[in-house]
Length: 116
Image (tube, rainbow, N blue to C red; front, side, top):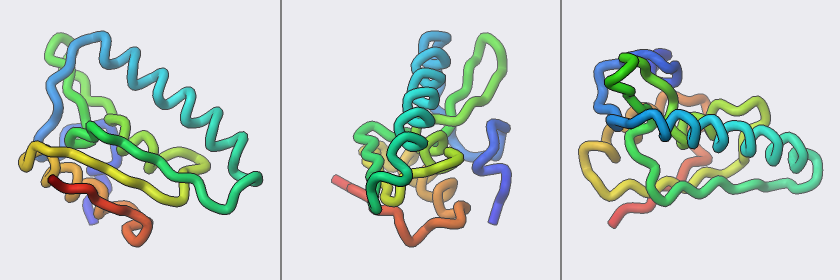
């Protein structure tokens, strides 16, 4: 298991090249996921996370040379994560990178992949 796969650092796998607006979007995704999953953790037995454009799981910002987690890895590393995950990524190279990163989690049995 490569622990770097779940950290916002370079890990040798492909990234999504992003502009500054993506950083704001991903912060909002993280904020709302934390609020929602924390509020729902004791209300339902199962909570699902669906990401239809999952990407490779990490974003790279050329302007700042910064790597941050993408939405799939944000969801997987939440303090109170959902119980089920559904990821879709149609680009084979990005899908392979996400698959490798996700398989490094301790919850591989709750992941479902949607492929074209």
